[in-house]
Image (cartoon, rainbow, N blue to C red; front, side):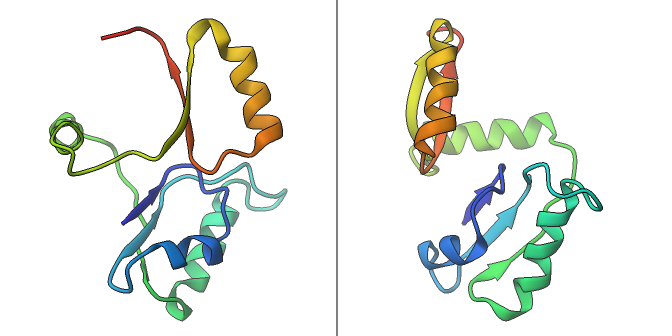
Length: 116
């Protein structure tokens, strides 16, 4: 499963990363255009969905604490691995922003607020 919280990659670049029985779940989208705003890119993905393999499933809802705790448990157990390409300390946010703007990272960038 690819759970895409940003939605800034074309569907055609993500489907090859999935098992044929996998699922792509778009959750977020970039700003989008003048007429549809951020819903435009999500609509485009959903319109392509009947014509692509693997499956595309829409996700809407409000996160519940119990669900977030379940995800945390999966991550801690090593059963769910977040795709993180780089981490920055809070003091290095300007560098992180430059990295995002110029290097087009292949996965997520984390700003570490505190050490646990």
